[in-house]
Length: 268
Image (cartoon, rainbow, N blue to C red; front, side, top):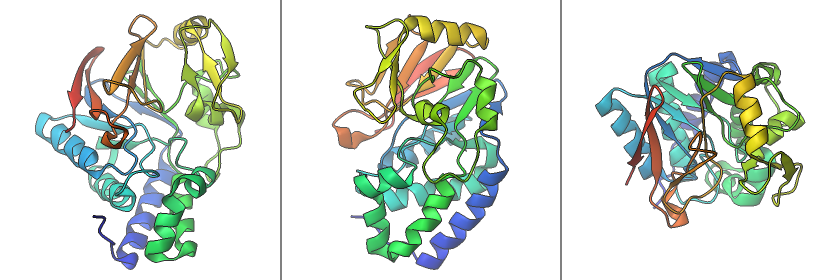
């Protein structure tokens, strides 16, 4: 059962976290080292707590790939607990923006209603403003790109992410939208319209390899798509999808990364 947190306390946490995220660049550069990369949690508080325990126990930095709310039963607790740890851990916990960190998605998929029931509909604006400050991508050791969705068809350099504006409740730049929404596909070589609609695209092997070579990248880790085993590889194991929400009927997985070596970890 979800626990209703004190409104004034939540407002304080959001306000402080907003200040932190506002100072972070849209493209986070992380030093080489050991990290745990976690996919979509969608209100799965147990997975988030297990990820933080695992990272602390093993001396790992933490990167979450977005989609903290909507759909799951403990959405408020999940996002607030993560924000509390962000305030404590600083750069030891990176929280990227997912496609569900937006006004449109929250109205359709539940988080707006959850917040309205707990604190009144006007309080949702606090979360919307927070989500608009989250960074879009992280690069680990100059070689591993972490994003929520995938590569855009109209972006050749990953450095372009630095110029994406903050403060947009729903991302407007088509490159930002696709970074959150695009999916890989082995059946095509370049780009094709996605079944998701709304300007989202599928990207194939040639598009992926060209982008990786141009930017000197070796590996991409992304979320966004449920995986039968909690994770899945494409493009000769250079693209890894991790999905970390048990409420999809799968084992919540994450990627423990050291240099370019990956161990799949289950956060049950």
